[in-house]
Length: 258
Image (cartoon, rainbow, N blue to C red; front, side):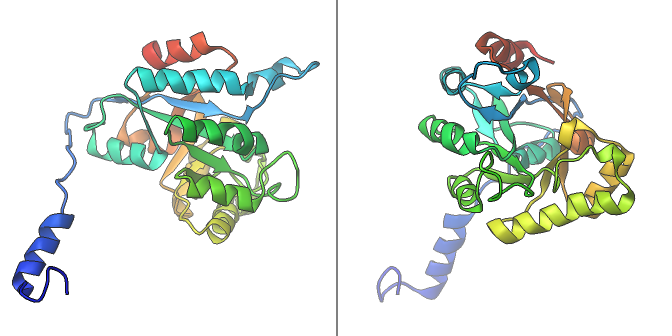
């Protein structure tokens, strides 16, 4: 028995309740927007000759990502998951975290596993990975299910990104339901976690998309619209900042973006 034979049951119960209790997090009813930078990454790889401007725009080198994570470390930022961000928006304050920032990785590219995950571990940072399952374990450019489990087991948040990455505006209601609901169900089954957060392919959203997200049990939706300020009512259309191959651009957005 814990504490030895002389410990009384009431004393043990008292010890257990006090040892596991935590003070409630602060709340703020002012209704003021919260500034939480959300950065959006795709592939993390060395530049290749012949890449188009579009390819370069959605890629970042491991060296630059390493520099960005170092910057966060040395300038007092704390990386949070989208789930933590939702909690902050619901409470109306980022407290007790003074300078939160959310790092998000879209699609499930294998370069995120090979190049981003080791750097996130190195710098003790967390991130949210938005995955669309269609190419997983089928296309060598994307992660396998086992690799995704490693990402999850490393403490990263797993989230949804549709089933096949279509432009949601082109879908029938039935197709939209399949893309959002069936992808969520498959990710939950394969990874053993609850999928509560979603990022729209190509950043598209609409009232119909938001209604389907809510129907299918998602608690947030992220777009690619630029913006650093958020309120509780914007949870289904979170804004962010697409990361490019420029450390200065990242630092400027982090410190001055609105």
